[in-house]
Amino acid sequence: MSTLRQIEANRRNAQKSTGPTSVTGKAASSMNALKTGIHAKSLVLPTEKLADLELLIDEYYHSHHPASPEARALIDDLIRCEWTLRRLHVAEAQLWAFDHKDAFTPDDKYPLGQTVGRKAKTFGQLQWRINCTRRASQRALQDLKQLKAEAQAAPPPPPPVEPDPP
Image (cartoon, rainbow, N blue to C red):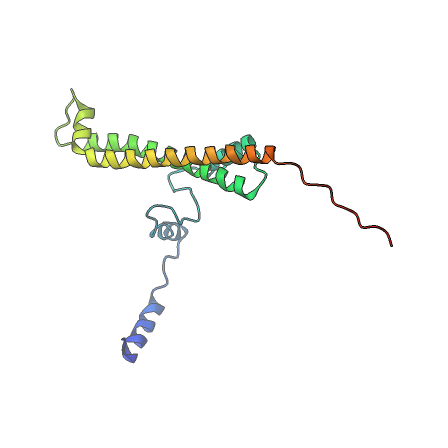
């Protein structure tokens, strides 16, 4: 347990630390805790374009016309999966380029083999993420189709009954 002197010293030191003040510094520090993006307020990383995500969202909503909260949640899952797959494909391309560039003695005859040989575990993990995301996308699409089929098969609700006049 902290002593009173330690608590007071901590309070004094905290007054000196005000964090970044510039717009650039604030933007950079806002990404400090970002690890996977699962709890991010935004799906867009600094290297990505918000307009691309907004276009993707518009395309999915225009294509599927969700009529219920459940359908909207499934479409949001599809959008997130597609956005993640796009990001993972860019990461894969960059991994190929980055590792080959940093090879001590690049092999001009077998550059891809050299990169895979050096980064087999990394490529395996990346492929695992791609496969999991694809499966999640397929499940969401299947669930969305089932939800639409159930909605079409359900009988329409009966018209409201008006009470008899007194």
